[in-house]
Length: 136
Image (cartoon, rainbow, N blue to C red; front, top):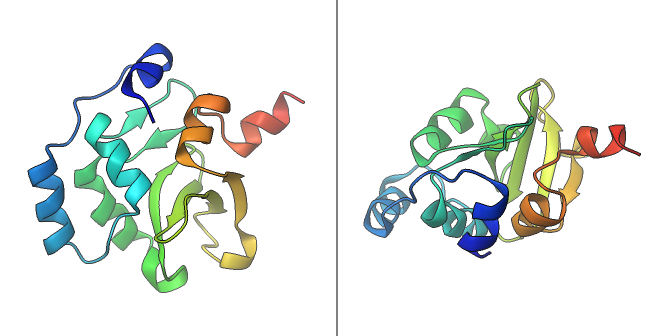
């Protein structure tokens, strides 16, 4: 993922200092998927100006704890939401981004949103499944 490409589409936040990210990885209750760690170095969270919001480093642990993501979706981490009750999650060992209702948090209810964070942000221009389906 190229910062210059993202900057053409979004207003980026300052990236997370790699030292701070490493400290979080050592001290955190769970690991953050590598593609999202790489994104955080470019921008600490993101609001697309539409529905999609990607979490800042400081909010990841709290949001995942509040929604008990690791209990209901072991191996997954919530990285954001659609501002309407749908969580965006990634699995630790995969690049795909999935959407799941925050009130359900069940693996059988998850839908693949994109093959990668890169695809979601660039090819799909940060549009969630519901936004993409509205435009068809």
